[in-house]
Length: 409
Image (tube, rainbow, N blue to C red; front, side, top):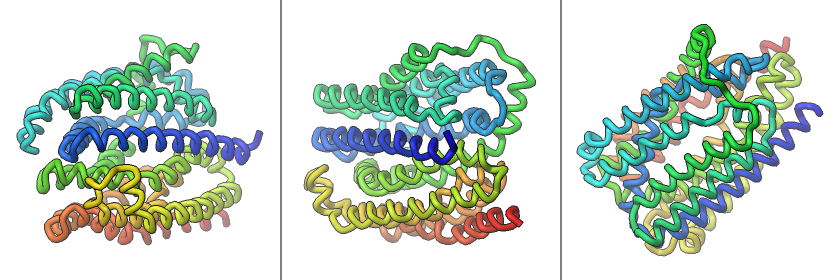
């Protein structure tokens, strides 16, 4: 089976996963939005933010290394698993230590216990069977589909059930913890091949050497995508943050996920065909063209029927977020076209370039976001995202064209 056929099947499976995930998440938020208030969802967003900050600052690039490695990865699996667990334990300690200062910074005492509970998530995830990486590496996305789906379904069942009982944000955090546990159990039950409790310093050194740019880029990327949570949560409060994040989840996120699933599938495909520049170029142009058409259709529907969609899925309580909803749709379309070249540059080993371009963007984004949030409120954060992306877009496009043309001569 050729890579084109595999890629089409992979996109189909990952597309099915994203559709299933979005439907489940949609139903979940439809229920949650009627049980909890915006401040609750804002507090949950801050918990996810704190845990995410710790995770991204300790990113080792293990998965990216294993996917891009051209030969058999079995010799790295044991060491990668031990490294993963060490990182998980460290993350648990770091997040737990951040709980109290974070509750003071955001002026929300409830965050203390929520963050302590959320600290269990990276610890639990660190025990995942490392061989699950072969789902992506070997383009076995049907297996990835069932693995991810069972986690999403578990989160839905736990979160919704507890929200109905407790009417508290605690339900959402418990959903994260217990669904992570379900995912770990599934990875060990389904996969017969399992890592051993052994490691090789040389192999760990090789992974860490490769992962240095991944780590830096992950930190920068997370800062870019999550600084709005930090600024809005601190400057405008959890109620506005909850409204902002729900609007984001129902407008920008569907468009982002379409683009991300294409990148997720194409990273291993690009990595395998990167040596054949003509084949690589043809595949890339087809992907970009198809992505443009799909995102255009989604964007038009979301923008034109924004009010109706909010009333249908969320209720009138959330109508005040319509302006945020619409501007997020615009950003989602622009992001899909010029902000999704990560898989392209990673597949040809240009992690350093990806990092540098994101450094430029973050230097633009931080002052811009502070100014625009002050002037326009929460919607100013989205304006900042759009402007910063448009500024760095020519650099990304120029280098993409350079790679596709110069190496083909």
